[in-house]
Image (cartoon, rainbow, N blue to C red):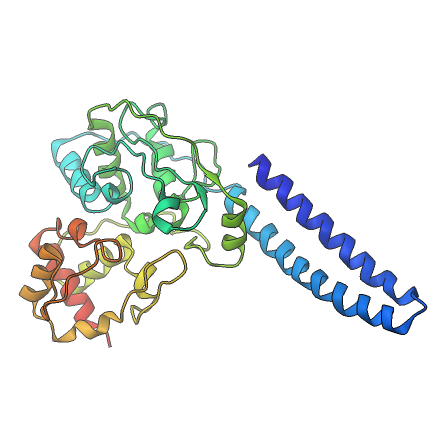
Length: 316
């Protein structure tokens, strides 16, 4: 953080200096020198003004306070709740919090490397009882998932961008129960250190940081083979990140560019489930595992995948 603060101060000071120099240019006696200073200095001043404003916004987005008051909760670790939490973790969390995509969630993946852009150290943390979250209360873990805040109410750069915040309260409780029940794995992971480029990109809206906050409470959703439950799943696995807010195509920047999901209207339920389980579309195209994490989504039950299919094919 200190390095980014120093770089931000340098940008701000350079901005002030160039604006001052442009303002002083009107005192030059030579018209040619005056216009050269106005145009040349003005271009640099404008660039620095944009960079200064963007980085200031990004610094706040990366380091500003985050999260609501911690809930006073203690989650029961029943077999049913642990099993549900394990299913969610296996479907979603293992994609980032595991080096091999399997449980337990021992962390260690640098998401900056996956993005192919020098965004700094964005290592996913060890979520087993041997990791840094061990002393956290259940309420603090809930806030980390729902609000993207750490135990002290500071922004978690990656978690604050995750659609896991759209999980129901009950499903988050199940995830907490599972996290507590994992075997401890000794695996130390570095703290997040976003680069100054990450701050600039965040301020420019080029990182998938979510605006605002999720609802404080989200009611439970019982698994059902219908479009409503499919919509719930699509929201927490984050299809909109790559396929756009209306699922008409999107992504780009640090995210893969996803196609329009309305093109799946002609897919049958069986074809969709097969594509999620094998990575091969009905037309014989092999899905890219980096662009489309079908191996994780394929871990959903037939009912869940059928519900997702019904929702996606119901879109106008």
